[in-house]
Length: 112
Image (cartoon, rainbow, N blue to C red; front, side, top):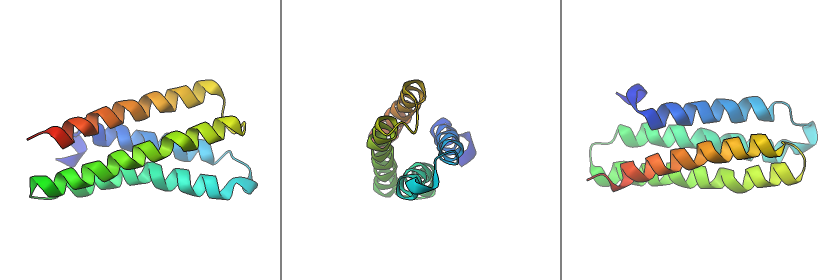
């Protein structure tokens, strides 16, 4: 079951943290808030869709898309830090979580 996948649960947690964090951003940052939330949400959605596929290549394709969404969050975090929307500690914490999710997705992609 999808809900038992550790990477899925970590991805959902990651999205919830991003969503809670971006609610505190000022209104003038709509574009970065929207993009950050969509990228973070895309991780768990693509894990779910990939998990529902029967063929290995289909699953791997969606897990690759999910991993790409993780990598999309990295420069967004850097931009948020540089624009003083988040502090260094929050940035590093979310980057560490993103790295863990990415590694877990790589494991799923390489699973035969």
